[in-house]
Length: 275
Length: 308
Image (cartoon, rainbow over all chains, first blue to last red; front, side, top):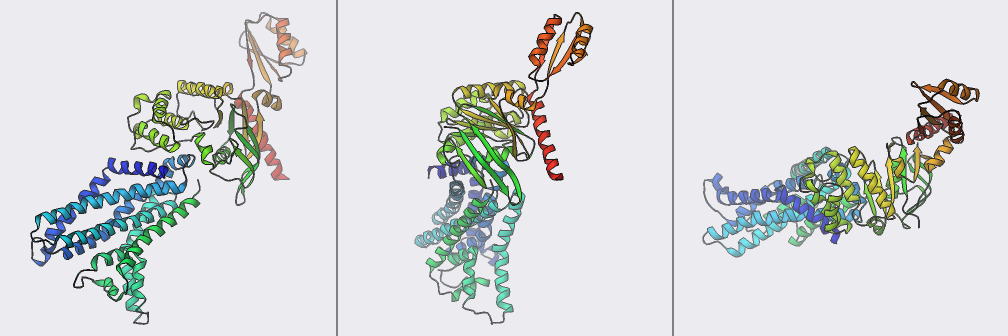
């Protein structure tokens, strides 16, 4: 456990030193505050509208951002150390590959969690303090859920980044693959699902389709954050999920399962990597 | 207990054999030079000892245990070729990071920075380091803890002559403390005096191993005796050619005699009987000569094997 922390603290201090943590936190805070007060500008309103609308807009944005940031943070975790020669050196030390991987996950995971907490947390505090007649309970509940699920989404994509970083032998291929993974889960997956729905002309078992959303962590994330408010906000492929007879706990378990499964796959790939 | 025991170890990747039937032993406090051309199997041998590769067949014990044992790794140091380290960390931070993982004290890390001559640059980022400075940092890293076995891969690359000399002195010092060292390299000039034995690898096979003296005997390469300041050079030359000795003139008043290691002393005696030279140099076959002899013999043997 100690060895895990030795690796984690290096990643954490790297994140502080190259100002990743600062940059992501500021980005999150600016986006959250901006969306809270200017999000309704399109519909001719200015100022804070409602908590559900704010969280829904934030979640739509974070669906794109969180995976991208996580992939950028971690895509070179393994292959980068290999290119610098330090991976081979570490492997001659009394530390296992599992400890190296877990240490990186803890370090990067903490950076993401802290950035979410600082960035979105500041925005929540600002809304609570500046907006009159705000329902504090709803604010804490909605933002807490949003922040926790955002962190989990980030962790799932961290683990995916380690997986592809363990599989490739050059940093540039890892970067390319990371972009591909982002594209696949954030954009392509929903389009394919919709296409399937349209072209199957109803032959596809409609009860099965909503479950396919669980195969994409970003869809699980959106389901967690868009559900639970009165009045359906769901649009596009997510409206499928209105028929989904699943409890919120299943969605949370799904997101957690994604992070865990990807990390296990990354570990398996890392173990097979030649020294 | 031997520091390293390798018995009949082979390593194959599919059809390719990287290492064939290797037998090699390293005693405590012994310095072994491991020489060979590119792809001869030096790095493979190192990686086997480090536990990064598993032999296809054969027995391998390091410090009496399996090489990938965590306890063995704490007592082993490795300097690898061309480590870049973490460019954004300072030298001191880098060494502290590795010290924590190896379970060594921070003070030792700071002392080692001083010892390898990096104290003045310890708080600069590694990305500003020259190749030689990174090499020193790598050496400091290998010395963390109390290594009983040191594996140094091309340790003098990028070091200036003085730093190279310092490195050899350090190796002598470690040997006296009972640390075993494996120096892995293409041929290193000036390393002869600092190794107990040399092992020469070629094409994945151990061609020769032994002390320099035994390697010289085995190779039968001639030694050369150079004498200058002779008073009667022509007579001396004539007497040696009538003796069937291999003699040739050298400079204005010198002579060069060539003979095997066995006849070297008698040639010298005869020379001193015949004249009083002002100066004498005895040129033994150097490590480079031995290396060339054994690797060429290996490639000839392989060529013959291919024909058959």
